[in-house]
Length: 164
Length: 211
Image (cartoon, rainbow over all chains, first blue to last red; front, top):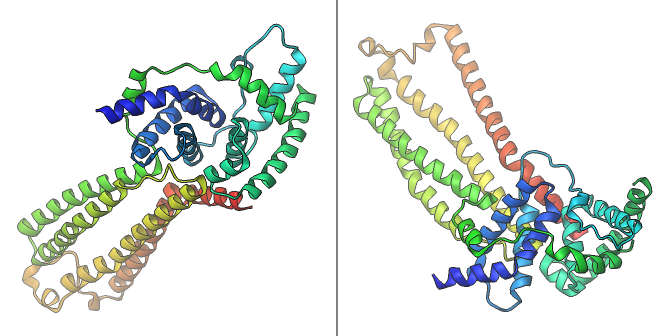
């Protein structure tokens, strides 16, 4: 199956995207594995719709975010808190910087599913126009939302940083 | 820390922070079952098709070997009804199999899921509710017919002569009301539990995107 092999190779080279989405939306390893599997399956099912009009990575972001946002679990999940073990420890980095980073992660974890998607795409260097096309909203709407999120994150991360 | 600082920090350090999957691992994942909502609907439709087949066979059996004429007619009608449902369910399954909205923009994907789920829930509810009066009507027209009532040889134990006792009439009416109300609320509860809460969640996400 040459199509399947092509898909597997493409996914293999872009699996970072799925890992990032899984880490952002799920708070434990088992759930992340489940989501990884689901995104892979959904991407494979939708692969026939990939027309090379956009980059594979952009298409995969769309599929991964769609799957993560609509992924339904009956039990109420606690918000994702990135533990310190998942963030690399660097001796040359100041503790202060690490703490600030942890605070920012906690603030991101507390965001809604939609805001998380916006932040994820923003951190991946997509411009407002591209973010808008992935989310299905206008660039103006993205700009307004990003401003709101920035303010929210600033406030929230300060809270976490003060108490850490 | 500002968001832009985090961006730089992330680029430098977090890209390698997860266990890499091999091509074999990815290949193995492609053979697993999906847990998506469309996948769940597909599974529900398969279960309904199998249940429909079993029910058709069971009703046909009773329709052929049943002791009472009224019961034979009753179950034969349901065998035909169930059999007629099979192509409808099969058509729905084929239609659902073609659906894949994950490569749409997030908002369109959410709207698509809400539309599909609402349609499924609506049809399921309508079908269940339509079966209540049909069941009652067929049961009474067969069991409480003039022929049955005035033919003691039939010894129809399911439909005693209602005109003879006020108590029996009250009992049957109460039974029908409770049966109908029970079916209504159980179906509502079932649909709300399995799909309603999820639909609400998706709708709130759409609303959030529009704000």
